[in-house]
Length: 455
Image 1 (cartoon, rainbow, N blue to C red):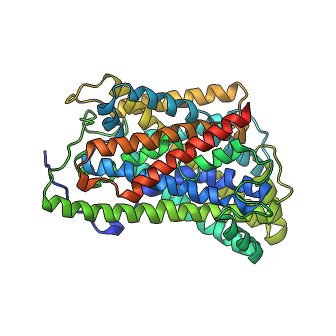
Image 2: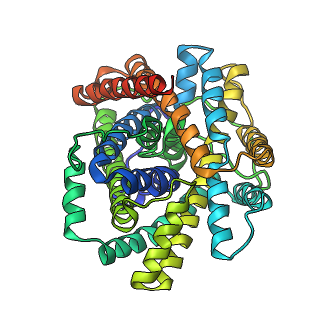
Image 3: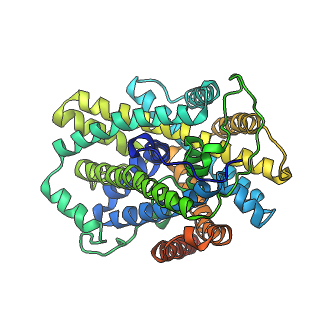
């Protein structure tokens, strides 16, 4: 196998993987959690969104660093460190992400739009629809990239237009203060704020939990670095060989490869900064400012009713087309997130199941494993809905708290992986290492504070 890094393409040709990860964030933190906190407490908590997405940006870069160098997912690297780690990733991914909060939320919005009764069959049909989308595409990466790009290019300009039509200068002044923790008469935390809600939003200021590890798959299948030589998960109905090696190969250390590495790293950092960090932060701010401007002081605490309140006020102020359009965009964001969550978690769980039994050098069938896990998760989601656990914000908050714990563990694991697996020339800078440690400590602090507040 080639042990040299391929030559990186032009920047515009590599844009794509970060759109998928951004799409995972749109329907949770950006649409529901940060706007809800802002609608209830004002914009002084936006510092948490800034800090949360910055920590996830650094974590994602270090996840990509490993795959760029090895051409394999980080989970293969973790398996080399400890054979029991795949079990942790299976449990910490399957349990929190199998809660069908996104399909439940999108079904409620669709029912509200078309005056349908809130029946259990609708979120179940959405789950099955998502499964079919993921099962019928030629390759998973292309399917996900097309979906997430389309919804982001549709939704973000529309939300931007709404925000500038509705908001005032005072809202933006408050948002600027909120980014440094300055609220209305308080700093960082308002009296009485629910720490579980804040921790959930902090964890979902980006993809959240183990979903950040999915960026490893996306750059590998996009052909970044040594990922150019790796296989791709294809549909069960696509022709071609399904079995492949899941291990990659580290490139040879020499001056030519070191020069290519610096070029690759420069464009990877730029792509993820612009798409994930910048657009993600902009979306958090826009949606939060819009929610605060529309329903501050009167936001409903029942489920996602505050979204309907925003829609109603938009209809009365600037026209029904904007109110209805807001709900349509919200439903599409939630649907795209549900697609992304099932795709990413099925990748993570299926590969780690394979790694539990895997022997180095042997080929496996990751496509078959992926689809078995995908439809198993859909079946579990249907069971949860049939049992009556269908209140979206409760499911999303519970899932977010569990994912915060998973993310707390992710920071030191990625730090250790890159330190053990990469030569000094290719490791993180001092600033990146510091931020990884800081991210871990922040999550330890917030998780501990949240657990204490519950007892």
